[in-house]
Amino acid sequence: MDAQRLEAILTRFPAITVLVMGDYFLDKYLIIDRRLSEVSLETGLEAFQVVEVRPFPGAAGTVASNLRALGVGVVALGVIGDDGEGYELKRGLEMMGVDTEPLVQVPGLLTSTYTKPLLREADGWVHELNRLDIVNRAPLLPEVEDAVISRLRQVIERVEGVIVADQVREQNCGVVTDRVRHEIAGLARAHPEVIFAADSRERIGLFHHITLKPNAWEAMRAVRPNRQSDVTRLEAEECGAELYRQCGRPVFVTLGMDGILVCDDHGCQHVPAVPVAGPIDIVGAGDSTMAGIVSALCAGASPREAALIGNLVASITIQQVGTTGTASPEQVRERFGEFIGMGPFPATSASSSRP
Image: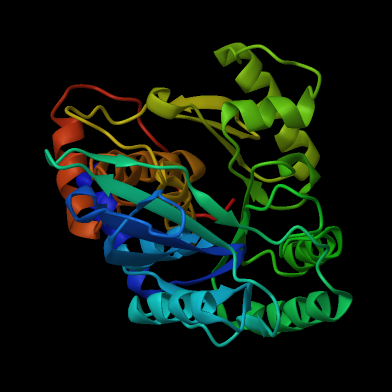
């Protein structure tokens, strides 16, 4: 891929709309100033003093924020509570320009929230304390499943892509239940013109007829669940190839700093990572990679081109330490220029057909 081809792909992003469906969390950062600490009269324990609260859409919301930074339109479909955290989550998405109309708000449900206390010591050192998690661990109610499926069927007619973010570990307790997953597979077969892609911590092997983006360990667990040791490159290739045989769509196996394996009807091909220097923060790297891959596929990129763009996006976001980073098209252009200046790299197909 050369700069002209990259430009042709990036310029199509504003015309694309992607549905991001799945588990939306609120990431709530509490900034605590140790210098202001008091001693509780009732317990004698230190009472931390919060001086700043930073709420951000997390999980599926991180994917949405990365898509919006790339200039892609986003529609959100998930389940949130009718509570303060749900309000903050929805407001955060709307401030990014996300269409939140399909979100299902359920009275009495606690909005999934990761509360992350950051303690600023007297000398200025900041470190994270134990995280406080609110996660739904009860099966999704059938009537809520009905609402999710109904809204999914409505939205599918007006998007070029669908990203499924399956975050909740407990089976059938998140948005992507067995029944919802079956519906996604049916819609993917019925709408071959739409790019469907899934990211799942626990159940990547249960998705069919859609593109998959596991990391090497997730791919291994899906194919060889009894394997416990580290995953070699060869094993990652074998598991990626098997997932491709099962799902019938390209599989992008992420290898961290080693890049991505693209497994499709051409076999498994390695797309190297984009080297970066200095401190890095890998939080959200997988979500930014997914945003880059799906945006590119929707814009007509080949799987290998999409993998390279996913790597470019991730190389930018991981350099944003202490926050869940995003990348703009201009930053992608600049990073690509730096990348090709490093020397020869594997060529990618210029095909504009969708996988």
